[in-house]
Image 1: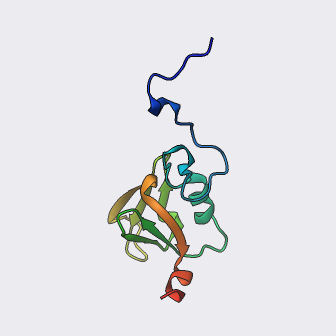
Image 2: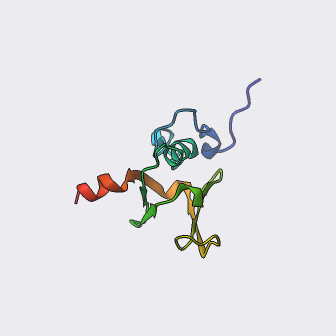
Amino acid sequence: MRREPACPADRIRPPRAGLPLAGDAKFGYDYGMNPEALAQELEREPFIPLRLRLSDGRTFDILNPGLCFIARLGLYAFRAKPRHALAEDVEVISLRHIVSIETIATAEQGR
């Protein structure tokens, strides 16, 4: 016998493989950025600097993919001065708040 979910939130389906970059709000819930899609952009050869647009309107530029670590629900982006081995700071960005990714060259052309 099939058990019915206790509340409507339990009916939300988990993300499917091949989600678009900014999630799938089809089921009433936005999963945010797909970590695999973000990893694909960071692993591109040759790397093209990226600009992340966040849900609060801020932007975050990624100039060196080696200073980024993708976790299941977040992106850890370390800041370091050029030619220094030690990170100065780390920015933790929730994948749910990444609205879009664009290359910095494309973003500059649109202005």
